Image 1 (spheres, helix red, strand yellow):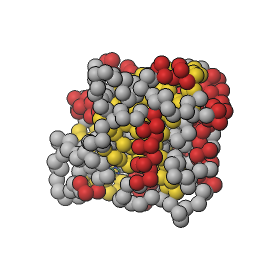
Image 2: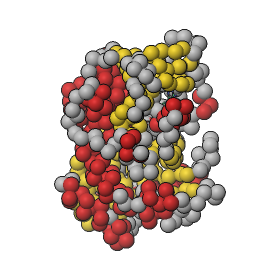
Image 3: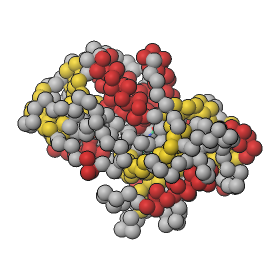
Image 4: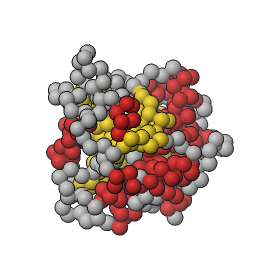
Length: 434
Ligand SMILES: Cc1cc2nc3c(=O)[nH]c(=O)nc-3n(C[C@H](O)[C@H](O)[C@H](O)COP(=O)(O)OP(=O)(O)OC[C@H]3O[C@@H](n4cnc5c(N)ncnc54)[C@H](O)[C@@H]3O)c2cc1C
């Protein structure tokens, strides 16, 4: 089959690889100059089935403190806490139970590809949830019960055991204890996306960068209209410039092309592509932040910075080891400024980094980033047939697009080929939205 993939974030790149591996003729359309240039660029890198299953148990408390100086939630003054927001932040064990098999399958698929293709990217194993007080320990209990029910390994640690696991932790910040999740991982998503792109190209997939899909038509032979999009570097909020190598457009004029199937991996832009076809997607887009700083190298203190991944449960902030850098990720921003990074959000990330690893990061060369999380209110992705002939979806990954990417791409490729997938994807497709 000739398959078009719209979007070269982690969902699109992994899909391109799996589809090409199945022998399809794959073309990826991406408006930016490189893979992983938007939401997949500098997120926390948590490939963490256990944490992602348990974390929402802590969600509600954060909503009660949005106006504090350091808070995991920032609302513009015009926005109120809507019922949808409350629902989304509440512990939802049903959604967590449905997602967990795909999370574990995805982690296993990534490990399989890592070994088979000898993929070398920055990664580390184990995640430690830091609990500053007894309140957090109490709040996390429903999540831990769910981990036990699902058979996901986890261990409660006291403060001394946390320090033994992560010797760089500051002893000056109050620490009640932690939850160690030994099977969770941290990985550099952007680096992995570049490797997967190379593998997909090796299998014959073509990538057309700086090319925006303006319109799609459903049908037995679905069509798409695409056009060259000149680079607009001024629009990027990240510090790194993007060049992907084969970024030259094949033509400057808008072009209509026919395929046998179109797969949309366009995150928040999926709704705009489907609206003219009469399909209204209830997608919400919330922003999040990261700072990435080089770690100081001092021979006498080899344990500066984290060894692997940590999450501060009070602030919902993740601290991830990314090679010789530390990445601090968090804050949900709703209705923020379109082009300016929030100083308050960035300040919260610096505060949490300083609380746990004071003096570990260099002050120069810090990369600040804001990315979007596109979600449906139930927190599950949109994965599978769209209900429109020839149009498929692999999108709406909210907080776990990296953690789900490899499994979702394999499952989608199986569905598209009419094969039974290794795990049941029921309840993930658009039909659940009525
Ligand atoms: C602060 C923060 C921290 C996070 N931490 C984690 C984490 O630790 N673990 C985890 O698993 N997830 C995490 N996430 C979520 C993760 O970033 C996303 O779920 C994931 O990157 C989504 O990937 P994607 O491919 O769907 O979207 P994207 O990476 O945004 O890719 C979509 C692509 O489609 C392209 N596109 C859109 N429309 C068009 C069009 N019309 N034509 C051509 N191209 C188009 C865009 O340019 C973009 O490149 C985090 C998110 C944020 C914001």
